[in-house]
Length: 287
Ligand code: S0N
Image 1 (cartoon, protein in one colour):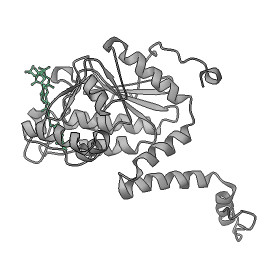
Image 2: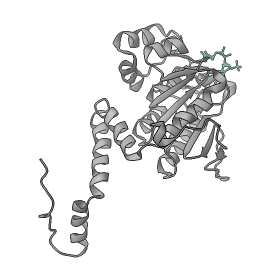
Image 3: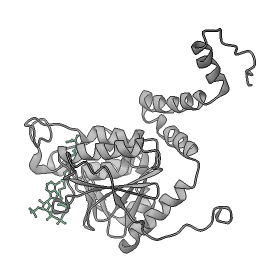
Image 4: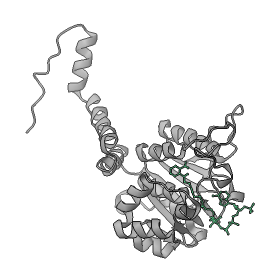
């Protein structure tokens, strides 16, 4: 492979701020791009990168942009600083119906963000230094890959603070670590260090903290060299069974997308536009 593609460079790219809308600047995140990689960083280190509804709204804006930007092949999702990837929902914003910030009613919009990451047709890599706990642990789990620093700590806190993620937080975890470990993680709300998380299948690799970004970018560069369509189809296929109708819809959309690119698909469209009957006779009925 390396003989064909060459070695992957390890320097950290020259990140450029992205989606810098002066009328609507980000307050809770940092959004950067370089070399076909988008980097989305939760920027609330004083709260161990806990998210409030505003944080989630900004994350969704950035992830949406990364999906639509044709030059982006992979997304890094991370937290500012070395102490936390994300410590989950900001408890000081929690109300009766969920989390509330500028408007007075609560919302559970992190669930929409989880779905967005699952359906984004490009790989999303969680780059984890420090704590990935509570809703922050679920966010790393819904990412396609996780690169952990050796100071990373993983776990659910819900049963200790009166919350629970009974959606992807339960089902994706069950897939990742198996039913017994998933029960252990939820019932006991224990924390696990990076080595333990690696053994449990929660992460892809563990690297020294000072090498975290270098290694993550290296993985991104490897991915970007490969076929975007193959990666897109692989991601939707890997999620399809677990995501039910929604997963099949995503994968089915890939089939439609590929069909539109064929002569057979184009004949149907051309015939309609040219006001003639389509001639599909020349297309084979493959075995
Ligand atoms: C992360 C921990 C272990 C770090 O400990 P450490 O290093 O000792 O730091 P601290 O001194 O504890 O923290 C530093 C400052 O940061 C504040 N802070 C940290 N985490 C949070 C947080 N989650 N919310 C608000 N503030 C936080 C500290 O208060 C401290 O501030 P100062 O300096 O002012 O004292 C440790 O901090 C810890 O255990 N944090 C709490 C982890 C936690 O329980 N998170 C919430 C879990 N629940 C969720 O995530 C909700 C899930 C969810 O959102 C959801 C799920 C499914 C369906 C819907 C929803 C939904 O509600 O939307």
